[in-house]
Image (cartoon, rainbow, N blue to C red; front, side, top):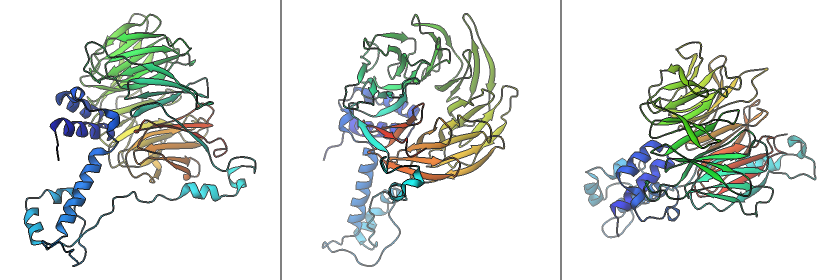
Length: 488
């Protein structure tokens, strides 16, 4: 058996990435020089470190259950052995004495309610189907990426066009009407000043008319791609570390980006130049969201939220929101732009207004950090709904007007990385690292369909008419579900 420090460091680095600890993964990977190892990422399956730890624990359990002469102890069962139990100093003597009862733990997923089979067993009238329509969502897979697909996003104007970004140093633009056709591959070449292997695409965003795609990468470079057959692009160089987020403003004439180097950069896309490099935060910038074509908010590991206004030749900070006790992972303005929602590793979601310094509501029923949040696109009449996904494996639906949770969806078994409402606000989809995609009815608070993918889900995305869902996975695959008959 051979274990090198490079191998162990790489597995720890991958574990941090897959668990959502993006910033810790970057710091550890940089200090351990992970990018300089000769390990091929595609050769390491998702969850490798946990898998090895589980197998090691099973070996210890087996060792404890066998006597010196090779016989199996049969004195009954005790509590399952934990990972910490296995490394306790007194374990060696316990094995020698062979006085521990055997525990044979089967490592497998707990069964989830068989929603898929329930859906298929329903009468067609229950789903609004006719006999000549499919009895379940049509499904296809997009193959081509060679590493994790961190993000996917539908073109805002073309229902059949999807963009994806991966750790394989490419973004791809797919025509899902013909899954067998070759996607447009947008390659992110190695730059002179960045370490080998630091080329993964970390974020992307379409402009409003769907003619341009902006991408941000691990090498700190942003690019703007023309979506015609030429594949022409502009290279935007200002950041000196990985970019975590970039967003077009609603008018499509300004792009803003942020990342590990703390800076927020405001770009003029038409000429590929930076208008402003803003020193807003004291730690990594994690998310950005536009309120209007000239006002945006940014959040950071420094626990703060900044609201800024920009024009052709100046910028100003309109507001600084304090209150979170840990890094702020995501922010979103509601559809009217009247309030801002933020979620944090401090287990809370807060609702802010520009009219006051203190938050309007503090939503704090999650048990672990909250990674993602989305507003319902339909805000009137009726409650203003906000959905949050957490590392506690739950999705919560909040009525923001009263500041209360109205339902908790508990089917997931691992961290929830992505939630999004359907365009009409009637349905909510969630994706988790337990491999499951769930579609929920917002009105009835019921689970109406589930699909188990091939690996952990990083992103789910609903196209503008609500007939197609995309899910991107940790094993390089993208799934497309045609749900038009399911959600009507």
